[in-house]
Image: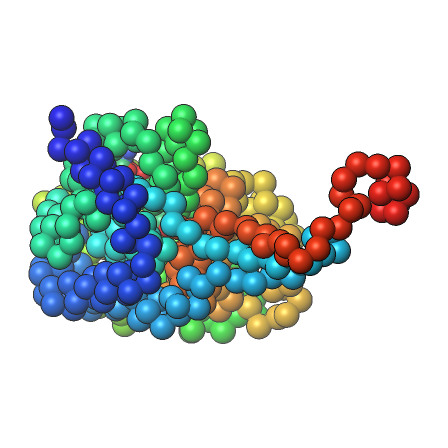
Length: 451
Ligand code: NAD
């Protein structure tokens, strides 16, 4: 039998024994995961450097610190979340008490992408453990150092009948998807999200799909331009733009466009120096294929800033393309790289219509001081989540469920959201045996009474 099939069978058997459902067991598993991360911080950063040339600062902030915070938050709240909740009873259930019991689904599959290869594999695992499931993680094949490290560390800290990493690419992913799972949590692209959902449908397996898309940023004429530029530059160019919630493109009001672009250039130099490729402190593009896809966009619109590339290092410096329109190839799909297209607008309603006509974005960022503008955008455009006067940070709060809507995904996690998506809510009514109301049984008298 193939190894992964054996592990799935072992996990099924282990889950059925009930140990993973014990609260004390879940708490100790979360503490173990916390220890794994803290003890191997340096190893994780080395693997991320190998795979993506991430700086220590970026690796720590975006792949390690967020997980430590998430585990702390989960440990603080797990007792409350896991307890059966008493809810009201209705007149039709007079005499009874009603409860909701959160229970784990069973054997869960987590398929993760390459852009935050450690964080995006471990964050769903926190939810799966907290809810009392077993888990198999299939990391991305495009970040092999991080994938191998996770396989080794998880193997060292957890028995495979509880948590295991299965490494490999599309082929292994396909084979895993042919198996029956109790829950599938997928993070990745929209087209693969469709494949996952189709595979899950065969076994009626519930799914969370954390997908991507083109997330807009809107800079209105009354925005605080210095803060807007700096926050936008950070959100766009962190991880070389390979972030699911990176602002994909920017709509800038025509009255402030030139001033804003000047601020953006200044912010790039402040944060990344004038030559981040030379200093080497810039994330590289994950593969040659992705690199060539991105460099093909560099002749779209007007090159306003940057544009230099290094094929050997697979690096593209922070780049601004001005005078972009929707007919440019860069506007067709999610960019997922360090290239920021600028589109101009003068009428807010018309861009609201334009964004509404497109697939619902994973994120939206709006820079304005006006409550009216904020209200108009929030009221009319549906998107996963976002920020006003900032970028990306909404996903770092465990109090804000994070996920997409429509083409950008389904289901939301982080904090209690992670516990909830990995739990089935079992509704239970406990009836009294002290009396038995006659009206529920069919008779003419009962019908007249309940009418
Ligand atoms: P991807 O969809 O190519 O791959 C994701 C995972 O699916 C990998 O483990 C891969 O091996 C597997 N996979 C790829 N093709 C498959 C197939 N045909 N059948 C079965 N499995 C397959 O995504 P990616 O390139 O690794 O990541 C980038 C995408 O992920 C972007 O679209 C980005 O927006 C999105 N993303 C979303 C989030 C989020 O939280 N919403 C976070 C990060 C990335």
